[in-house]
Image (cartoon, rainbow, N blue to C red; front, side, top):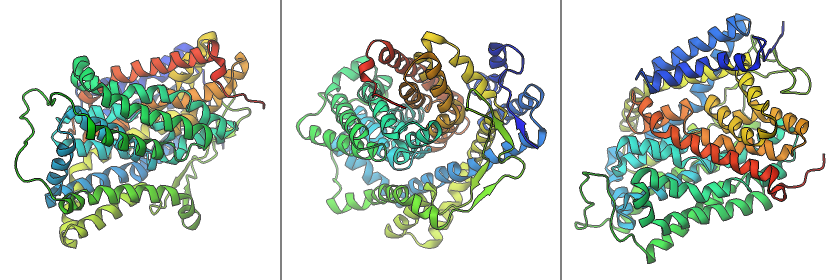
Length: 543
């Protein structure tokens, strides 16, 4: 028996949207204002989502609970699997003492915290995002920043803010290729349009990142580094996205950005070294790591980078060889998505990729085991370290499971689509709200890819009804969505785990919320200007 989604269950779209937002309000309110532990807040939000689905949207109970189960499975694999193994690598380097050498080598290049956040939080994080996505850069960069001596809240918040501009091209362009599949729009045009929106923010984010940490005065003191990091990311981002395609945008742009900052530091250094208030100055004397010691210390991170890139590149091939997919018999194709989100009622797939072999977390596990052995750890030491890591993140894994269960319930019940339709009813202002809709989608689902699946076709249909370019609004869904990445519950939890702040997720959310909303508004303004003032920036589309 099938069930068709209803997007206006209360007869008034805006009232329905307010009710649909209750689970999100419960979740974020519990985290931000009532200081409830993250896993408890997630379970409360899940309970609210189930109540809204059952009693407002009249979703059959078997489908509602099956949606929650499907989301829980996805929370374990791939998301939880990534988090667990990313922290495992970091714990290995701490156990062997090699992270101290990493700290010394970075301090030798730049002891200034502002330069370190540009190198790790922005440029290196963008490389990891391009290779894998799905929370990996926040987990890796958050752990590295903690190891470098950053304060936990700053490490978490800054890792989240830095992981914005690269997200639309993350995981080898998966959000863009998925958007093209959902909307039946040319992938090259979507890639080009996003590549004419995000480079502006690739230039802004490094300045914004340093300003968030050190204030306006601290930012001005290192403006050359901010400019070089952003400019040498933005230019390749534009070129590759417009003339090559979405797959290697972040990989190439991040590599160019890292190299450009490295070259700059050979000729320029900030006049004074910035540290956190009350933090001791970085040591300037003492033995410097030798070249061999530095290579040994950086080896796990180099192996990690190569592993996630290779895994991402060969993932389609691995999936062809071994990719068992489980179809949820109580949900698969039984929930029908209805117009205007789709041209005609269409069954929603409800599957779960059982194959852990192609998962990014497996690449991290292989990198961790190989690195540990090369660093001299015995198999028993690796096993005990892994168990300690698992014990450390157990409550966070439960939180991720509950968060994803909540997201899947809102998706299959249609309540998130209700909020999307409320945005889509804004008429002339829709180009602005197209970006805000993407922001909302990622905040709800935790993924730019999922947001594109959720709202991509709605963006296309609404644009055609209003006489706008569907290329512009569909791309805006992805570009606006990247700014929601820093406040989605999944990313907040990952950042908390990576920086040892389990239970402080509400504090992290309050730290980043303004930045997320402000940057999303700026994306909306840009899309509005592209629609009405600078339409020449939109690639021509002839359906």
